[in-house]
Length: 372
Ligand code: KG4
Ligand code: ZN
Image (tube, rainbow, N blue to C red; front, top):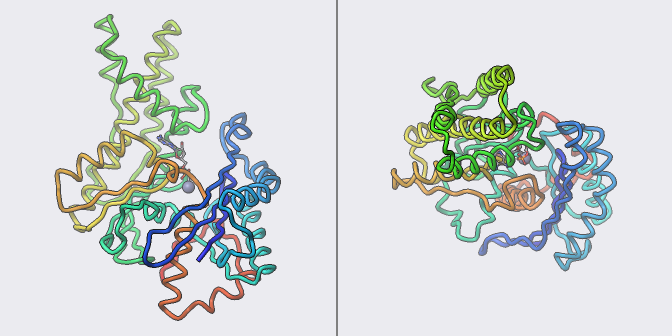
């Protein structure tokens, strides 16, 4: 079966063509992403109406490009898939309406996918994953809008066992970057600064400065809370106060740059330590076969390193992370989730539910994960 998937929930317009059957892993024939980062960078964050305008402009060219790269025509598509929510409503409306129109004209079913479901299922695009050995699993969700621990006993059997009370971890990365005037989106910039700082420590000659930089440390919020919830706003505020104090001290530009690297490093250490500690508590408590990580922050090398290290000590759990190209928002992840959802509905004799989606599917900014 061939699937055309669309993703327009935030600031990436993406279309993908996938091919799937039950005997082989789903293959991605094309996955085109048109990023609006440059447009939103000026504002320091995503402006919903600007995002919608760009999606409208880019959606058809991106679909055409996905079809061309996937050597496919619309007539050979068997299933349409789209991110239904959660996300920015003006942005979601563009993708859902384009998908509904395609489904209507081509008389093929349409599936609405939860954005986080897409991030989770991006892990099934790895060819070396055997889906039969996946469950039960624990998934650590780390994106710009979500930080959650989800337990799954089977496909589409979601149980949220913990989540953030305030900021998502990606949001905290973005805000720290903004505080340090480093740019947007902050996650990749902060992690690069942290990595460069770690590499440069040995080259710092001034011992006093070196010790000062290495002594920077931020709280690990809720690390001992004995539950699976998170909080990142206090950590972000701790960075803000540290930065305010720094600005009062009259230090040169070069030293300030070193401080920024050290702050990024210390912040990343705190954030990743809390994520890994809570995740490993969940792994020990629920003894899953697999641990997955999903969402934009899964591109963070430090987080992946720490999770790999902690799971290798346990032996009993298989750790899986998405390929780098599928960590951030993309349509291939929506397509692979749609493939598994379609097959689960088929098995449950519920495919008829998809017939009217061209008419009734509605973008839902606050969509919840749907069990089957
Ligand atoms: O999943 P995603 O692309 O969009 C949402 O669903 O929110 O995640 C975006 C988030 C942003 O906050 C971005 O700064 C963060 O992922 N991010 C990273 C890295 N790459 C992207 N955070 C930390 N380290 C990274 N390397
Ligand atoms: Zn996302």
